Length: 335
Image (tube, rainbow, N blue to C red; front, side, top):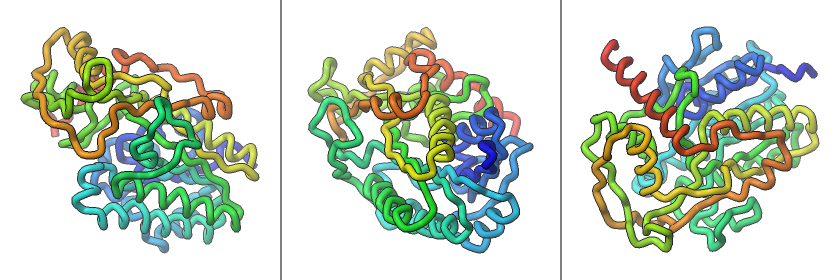
């Protein structure tokens, strides 16, 4: 089969999905996007990429897309991603992330699509009792968001066992930054990602940055996370797709992170350095369920794929996020 097979990207108008679209396009793949534009943005999809506005649970639409475009692989990003909201509105998350993923998987099986890459999360691990999380670390989610993703992982495994489908589950740690060329980035208003919030504060669109908890068992008392540049993450998806095509008898589950962590204060200090400005920090109490530290062990992805991160520098991640925030401000002014 031609390695450059047509790929359907669900949620391709969203933050991570739009970067995957660019990575696929840059690698020469024919790309098709489906997005309902509830949280995505039409401007995030390049004009030369075929776009369908619709829902992944619409079986008739999916069947038509698969047939019309000759789809041979799916990268599945569509879903809801705000952890606190999943606690307050669990049924929304089980609907958007689990029930609709089930419908999508069924459409792939019916349409004979042999490969799927699934956007999962480190939230599947809950609060691990190890310094670095491997794929063998017990998956014990502590919120509906993590459970909704883990349920989809289970469905994929069970379905692949009895159908001509292989898959790759990629469990993301803290995704940050923006396309180095300024083509797309995190555009959602009210986003909760720390670096997104911090660059908004640096540019004056937020009053301050809330620091949730200063008494963690870390070097400065604030939570430590493994931040991965979204462009490196998108590149991992393309390599994972090529691995699935090369070995249709193999499915994979892999962590996506750099294997090192930065505290909240270290991230805010990086934003201060890049902007030569001081962000106002507002100290608040801990949020329920936040672990002291959550860092990936990326050994499996590094040994399985020829993945060489290009942007594993915190100041560079911040710089790209800041550049996109400025572009976004101009878009808002001109729209």
